[in-house]
Image (cartoon, rainbow over the protein chains, first blue to last red):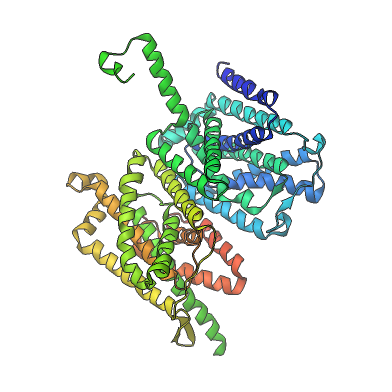
Length: 330
Length: 290
């Protein structure tokens, strides 16, 4: 399994971070980056491989978050069970929205619009429904035991987030190499042609959306256990829909490591912005928006694409010295 | 017949609000009809125009209706520039890229406004804001009546422009058959940018019509643009007449459901309608398919 080596290596490298430093600032930063990488990986499966650009992945993130929180707070369910239920609920929402949209033949802009609208409806409903705590939100009781999925220090959270990201990487890698993955890419490249060749495109998209939603929901479940709070704006707000698509696009859309790379780059930029301007609202998002436009304009395959191109150039240099005309700028 | 007075007022108010929705939707549908993209930055541009109208009044003392005369060309140029310099080059011929770029623009504009002006909600005070006109049994605020009239004037002049001028003919040619238009010597990139400019100018005028009776904050435009999406989908993407009818219809539905169901449920009504139309009649209910 050649494809697994880089994943294991990256996990081992990142897994050593809490051994090297116990700084809460560093770990907190990395946990949030991993969380966004996870949600972004969900988006990447549907958007990057399947070409279906969702503008409403908040619908899945938020459902995972709310189900995990509400089951614990209102029904006394164990946190780990709640976590699993949250993932299942997110997948279900993904399957329902996917079934409705794909059966109606929505694609491109229309698909983006309808996913956005579903997320907004859920946000409005969550901000008035009593079961979600309406405008106040839902607070998970502090209970620092591992049975309750809560920990004294940041390191266990960090390792759990890292494991979740690792699983998502392997899952997407496995899909990439499978027949289903080939169908998915075929749908992205030319849906009509794929259908003509006998691919059940609606089913392929639906399965991709369900898995994608489950991954995004996992991010939401983890968010609740880490921050112990959720409200309608956090769960279903546009911020998470935007970050979910931002990180794979910045990192490398349709590539296994895209979301992780993108999350590290984007979150670093966000932190730098905060250093420069303090905590003024808006500026980090201005930077994210500019990065999104810049990446789409000049580096359509993101950071990973740039790295690949550089890597190839360097290899080419090793094999043969460059012609004299190019040697000047090297 | 006293019992009829309230529903009539509600419907008339809905029609007046719907006219502004129609204008915002007109810009959106124009851009869609020609460029075949959904401009996700439309709402952010509306917010920016509302801020411009607000400061034109606060700093320069310009009445919003006068400001519209200056803001429409200004936003035309802004829209032209955005399409020509940012959106067009970033597209690389892929619709998916345009989606992302307009979304990125929306995020940048909205949050730049948030960063500069903070989340404060601002309103302007006009001497005539609370004057009313008597229409049958109903009393309608003057700004709404003005808005209604202006929207139809704008729609009519847009229609005339599209029908009779060379630019209008070029726009229609590009919308119908891009390659053919290009082969007959039409500069497609220029026409795209002009169309985007017109769409943005519609938004600037809509902002000036809204500001006398509404507030502005960095998220003010979003409410309208989601409604505009609904209108455009209802009316059929790219259909000008559909946008007008759809706008008035949505205005009335919102007004009625707001009156009978309350504000936040009224909002859900719009979304529910939007999703249902997208799912079952994505080619539009009224106008011809785009």
